Length: 557
Image: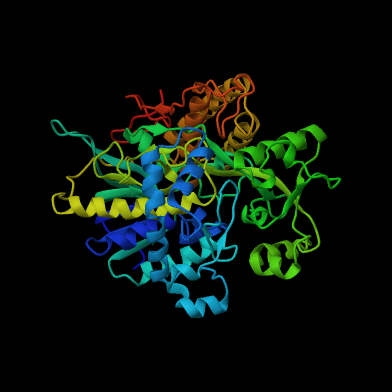
């Protein structure tokens, strides 16, 4: 079902990517579920994911090997119990996706026919990606996210118990007061109708944040425009802790082209033998890591950043032209097609690439069931800090986490469902303030925010850069607070309000880490501390950064 949101739902999921749709399908067997999307459903990051899903399926591989690879890349900050939970249940998630009809790539047509085709795990083709010691990446050519998303979206549209709502932007959580001896509770969400600019409230027994990450905070990103940190900001304002926000993963190889600034070149291409080269054709990765092009993403991104700055070049080049042309076209059909449209034949030409913001490793703190600090509020996917990724995410573990934690969250909600009544009415959102604001001011602040984060809180940081970022963000917060207080709200303003808050959390977390570890490299603190400690920020009882009244809001001090 699609359309206008009902005033009450058993479960309201904010976000329509892999994590949100998976939880919706798992929970719809016992509850009436709504999925809220601020744009069309496919505007989430899942749709654009190229690589795949990490799971142990090969006899020569092992769960312990996958666990250890994850722990090593995570720089000492992965929570082993969470790593074990996700790794141990990833194969079951892949099996469920096959049952839904996801068209994963098989080893060969003959093998697929012998082993039962697309419902048999043993028939799946396994790719290699950086820092994985074995081939364990399940994929659908080079468009895995699209294949997964389109399958889950179709299943959700067909399900009578799932209500899909496009064009609705979440504003804030309806946070209810504590009962004696209990945690604060979530009772629903305030939402904006993007078409009419009217505010509505949706009551829900359970709310799930599945809004993705915050890579839109950076000037260059592989993510769609929807990655504005909405779930992290809403959870923080409602009183949830966030963790490890300083660890922002920059994908090493984003296509450098004026007409395709967000097009990702999957890491799997390096897994299939592609080389990174300087403009003169020299390979350079061996100077930075013995694993060469298959080093972890943080190492490769810093190496490219170093070489481009050293040489004064705009980009480096990824070269797979030495591999058989048929293999390249078959393994990477979408990349081959898109690059051809831009005048680059990857079977013969080198691909110009640069690092770009790709994944938010920190977020709302959750346990293995997706539970947050607030009762009846769950979070899944890139919105969260689960402890899986630590200081750096290994390739293709993110989709595995989406499915495994969504499964666990659905099971947890099912256990509580019968004993959780609909919440009593919360406060009314003060809608209809003023007239529409000046769009030029909003767009200018967007640009200033993203350039500030790229220049001062990017791949390489320093204490002075972080201090500059903090001062500039403070000025932006004041302007956005005044704008939010004075003018009628819009989706652009809500996203800007959320992103400046999340950017401030990133800067505050980065300043607190007096070492270099994983994705966080500080020129003033280049050494890694002997003890690995998470950065955990706790909300305080102050006014919302926007300056507007949000019932029960708490925020950055």
